[in-house]
Length: 265
Image (cartoon, rainbow, N blue to C red; front, side, top):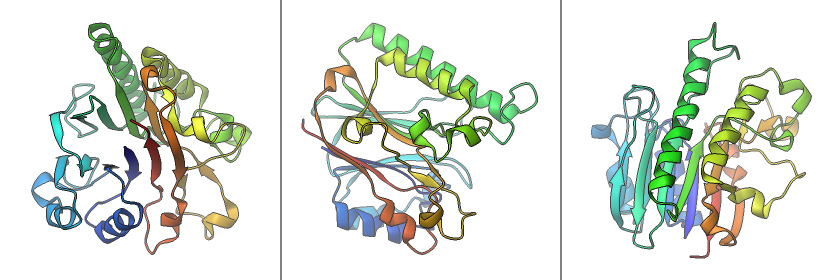
């Protein structure tokens, strides 16, 4: 089961790139974040023509939005709202093999890492805290739940997930408070970082590079904001994992690259 997570930063603007990627990589399932597209304008026809006939999209105009696009049929779909907001940051699909696939777009958090003065940062922390409580409840009701969690978590947790740990300690996405709260969420499910199973630390690994860099590959000031996690009962199933950074070289690309993980299920 080959699963991809990609913050596409507007699915309609980059639909040709998405189809190009699907034709090249042939994943079973593609999870997109930041659709910036209301459901009525989602490009269903393009995905249908590419062979991805099962789609669960949850979008809105101009902001946010998540989708699960699949060649494999769903047996169940769902969405979850967090923090009392209907801002399209989660969707779930369950497959015939019993795997739940959760697609998240965690809030970015703004520029100032202080919840007392930055409402966006406070929202980010509250969102992850609520995720933690929610998953703890789900785990309690079904401790054998088999799940893969993917998405743009907007946090680079490890020193090796950023180009400079020292210089980014006070930059939103790598601050100690964010790393700590994300780790609490990870512990709530004893989740395993599927990508680091294949690309172990201390190797540097990034999935996002700022548009500000004139030559992003030369400067390589990246962060690993996009993740694929799995429940502990899926340990040992990861066959391959990589970041498809070629997509970052395409014309008018997303600032995120696809994260590709293949499971032996």
